[in-house]
Amino acid sequence: MKLSFELSKKGRKAYSLPPLDVPLTEELPKEYLRKSLPRLPELSEPDVIRHFTNLSGLNYHIERGMYPLGSCTMKYNPKINEEFVRLSGLANLHPLQPEETVQGALTILYELQNYLAEISGMDEVSLQPVAGAHSELASLLIVRKYFDKKGENRTKILVPDSSHGTNPASSVLAGFKPVEVKSDARGLIELKALSELMDKEVACVMLTVPNTLGLFEQQIEEIARIVHQSGGILYLDGANLNAFLGIVKSRDLGFDMIHFNLHKTFGTPHGAGGPGGGGIGIVQELSPFLPVPRIVKTPTTDNRQPITDSYELSYDFPDSIGRVHGFYGNFGVCVKAYAYIRMLGAQGMREVSENAILNANYLMSELKKYYELPYKGPCMHEFVLSGDRQAKLGVKTLDIAKRLLDYGFHPPTIYFPLIVHEALMIEPTETESIETLNEFRDAMIKIDEEARTNPEIVKSAPHNTPVRRLDEARAAKELDVNFYK
Ligand SMILES: *Cc1c(COP(=O)(O)O)cnc(C)c1O
Image 1 (tube, rainbow, N blue to C red):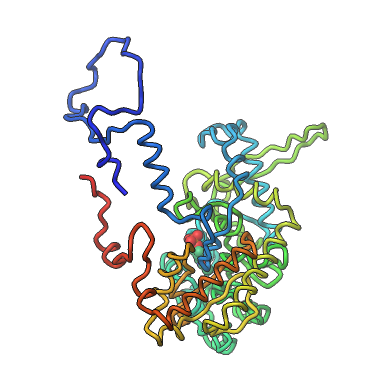
Image 2 (spheres, protein in one colour):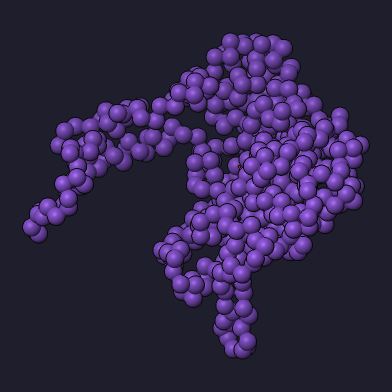
């Protein structure tokens, strides 16, 4: 496809403006004036529309097909969320407006915090962090302040070997030393390994439940007991919350903190579809340290209708870790998550997870005849296959992923978690129909067959995408975003 600059024809325009009817002035100081005109493509309106419509079709997105990218929960995001966030009373707010003029917006944030507290069983929620990783950092800063305040010098964070890379990275950013905990043969935390590592220097243990293998930690209560016995904090990386919404509360499992990924679990777009949304939930004991401002509700003192509770942003929390983001986080994302939760309701939340689990188990049982399944299920909302069998034929997991593009699917997450050889991490999500799951299954089976009968076609894939196989290392190292200079 050509760049808009290559389509440009001198003098062609997509606008028509009336002639200037005010005198031209040159009051701006000379040094601020352009020396030459900006180099912009000159195109007609249809040229522009066609260019961008065609461009959008080059990208793979959830509106185009299934996106089984494990760990990322690429569900279909209902368009009604977008309708809500575009309401002028929300979209046209200014973040510096006086609080009494944004009571509706504060109500939405306050209620969303309550819903997330209800879902997780936690006492308090902050919506200020804007991603999972950002929430991890905010949470670990809270952990640090909590132990500083108690006069305890705890320097280590324990993270399982199956954890997402953000867990050790956030630990380092918050000033801790991450220490790895080994998984056992079942892919779960080894209690003995955990007990041996647990000492008075461990501030926090970060667990992902279900873990990145899609398995639920079966001894979670025992893990919580071990962590709490030596005074540590148990943190839930809640990126996989899509597996147990409305089924179990993380607080009841023994967790003290959780982070939410609004863009994974609560129907807000991600992956170039818009900014992310995070959020943290914590138990009372940690609440003095939450980021400020916090939304404080003053209930109405009269019982006239309509109810006139008032909300304000309070900075009056002297032990707070302070701000972690400008204003109140990503407000628009919060509105979409609020709409999503309100639309589905409590029963709907539970059905999200039940269907996500059902879809994953269906695909897993269909595919395990063709691909190795190193950690046996049943799985939760995702599962991890190994491409080892195909690799022995010279077809690597990367090749399988590229070949899936030819069959019209976004590939699963590959080579993660690190503890699985040639990993293919598949998360179908609840929004895919049985027909789509079957189409994906058939493509995977076909690729397995090709690995045996025609490996070259897989190894040289993709064949029918806008670009062929890229040199990803070089693309990252020699980023050329200035291609039209
Ligand atoms: C996605 C993910 C994260 C990080 O969340 P972001 O919103 O991408 O920063 C952390 N842990 C796990 C298990 C994840 O899947």
